[in-house]
Image (cartoon, rainbow, N blue to C red; front, side, top):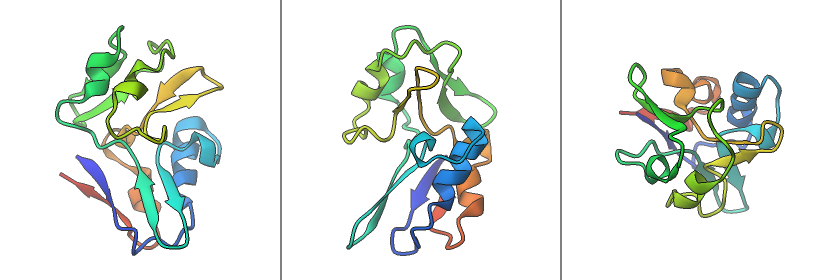
Length: 135
């Protein structure tokens, strides 16, 4: 399961980013969102964990803080175990702009989309249906 984004449908409202940070961090903050929408004159682009079949981030974590949740079928970072070393972020081939696996400066750990453990809030709140679940 992963999130698919249609930039042509996106109305640039940032609702997905705000609900993400509210759901996970308890407040509305674009910086604390686990999905990032990049906007320019020509297009919108979403940066979100692709939930790879064989994720390089998992193998890169020296303490095994990236876990697989059997029930939802998603990989997530266990914030209670993460030491904030950043090796997961370096290993992710999609994290070239440092916006898929993100450092949380408050908690001093890394975070990434966990698909809200099977109930992604961003796909539900998107008013233009630019986000949908695949798989």
